Image (cartoon, rainbow over all chains, first blue to last red; front, side, top):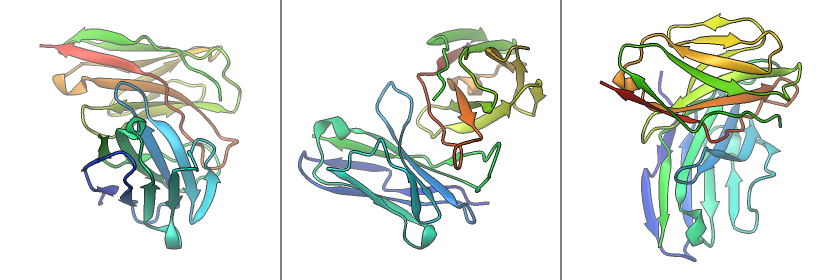
Length: 116
Length: 112
């Protein structure tokens, strides 16, 4: 079974430039998450999708970050304009929809962003 | 979201058991206890989860205190590959899709 695919793996940009990250979740997984992980910290949830609708985006800095999940499959996270503090690994995860318990999250390897 | 408290770091010797503690004194009755780990330069991966009873799987065991205010992840024989950051997370079944909120975790180092 193919895992969660993310690209690009690495990206270096200058501040005020824009960048986009792409995520392809595991086939059939209805829920998709984007996390930001700053060096030395645990992952921080940015946004959660259920199919192509947003469930939670309370931690997404909406003045510069945007995310979409067209057709309830692939997702794109965009940052425009980037700031130095956006340097981090951006992790995408997916899970099957569950009304209760588990729903194990499967994570991709992440996209490492460096803003100069 | 209910909070968990874990030691920042722990050390273990290879092939010995490891007990990773987690305190969650404000846990509610609808919170499951989940453990994930993150190997260097990789995304987190699921380890185990439970509600009230102790749980075992091929990776680890989870021991949950009777009052559910603490739990312990047990690796029965640590290997070098188990060196990672281990996250203890409370996940409510009441929230749609059960979002996962990570803390700082415990960084486990394994000595040969």
